[in-house]
Length: 215
Image (cartoon, rainbow, N blue to C red):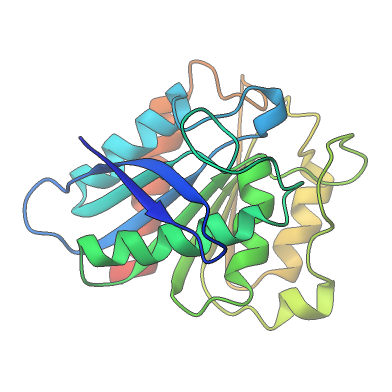
């Protein structure tokens, strides 16, 4: 694991970790963590599991802390300024390995990742875990409109725990119908935090990455 820093386009310094791929690099991935005001950071078991799985499939994986979290500079940007962090992370990950880039976001990070991807052609595919939908109660900017989402034609994986009250299945199914092509996975026996299902979820994302990025 290589600790690093990179800079968003507004000058904010962001800390991250780059996990080199096992074997020959085939592409890159960026992981976006949960809500900063709920204790979210790059250091969470579900993100560790995903990082190891994707590196094992030949991707250089960049995990980072959003602005204002731990050693990253700046301050909380209510989900809007954080798009700049994701854009910079994508650029840094692509310096580490040629090939397509997967962006994976969890919770708050899924909201930010989807909004950034809609205007960032460098994103080849998206994996969104526990994306907050409906009356989630989280302080988040609205997602792109249905018409904006319908023109996003890159592969998307939507994952939610069966007991996830922030990302309930009916709302997630509606989002899946709007985003095409998309895959939907409801993981039984867990909730928004995917406790005890980390390896299962990571494998599902790894399989998706293989299909979406490399056919």
